[in-house]
Image (cartoon, rainbow, N blue to C red; front, side, top):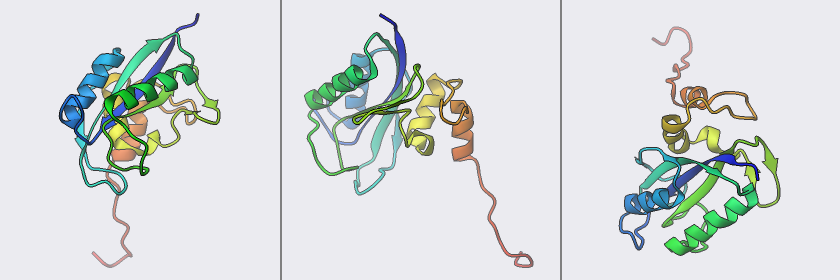
Length: 162
């Protein structure tokens, strides 16, 4: 069986059986193994009002992407995640962001994750553990995607308004 490498985003913003969101993320990282990033605190995306704890881990697995996704969803349920509002508060959220196999488009799973390039809460931890990983869609490395997302942009002002 071939071994694949995966980047898995780990986040949460509700207390669970391990305690705070940071403790839930730490427990998930320990369970998944691999090379974990530092945990960062980030503002919520969408309607939630609670701050998130976010991290990424890079794991090696013989599981195909669909099997890994099923295992990640089982870990979420075991941690207390319940179906609910999109982008709402959750104990744990696990997403496959990148896969060493490149691209995949199936009904339950699209790789790379379609939104990872626009999410600093994914790119910042990913930068800590896999800065050279190349996005199979754009061809850019994680460090370049992060720089593009976070660089300061000049303010466009009409001439003569300085």
